[in-house]
Image (tube, rainbow, N blue to C red):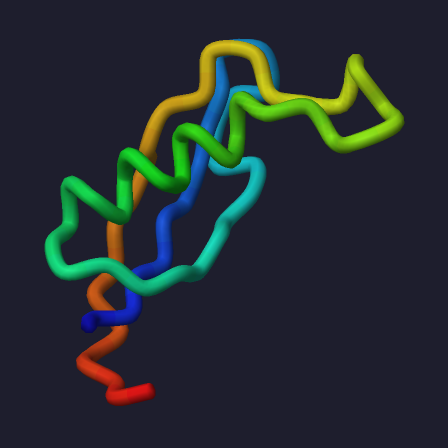
Length: 66
């Protein structure tokens, strides 16, 4: 598995607004996971999520064995 950092931007906030780090085999899988995370409201806070998020930057942080 590779470790990826996805920088997220939105139309509303402009520019880069957040980032998440996770593991995935390929970049597209990491992007899909990050976008799902960005669109999911925080439990107990239904209005706490990003509208129209997009992957602004994708960084491959290397391979790790767990």
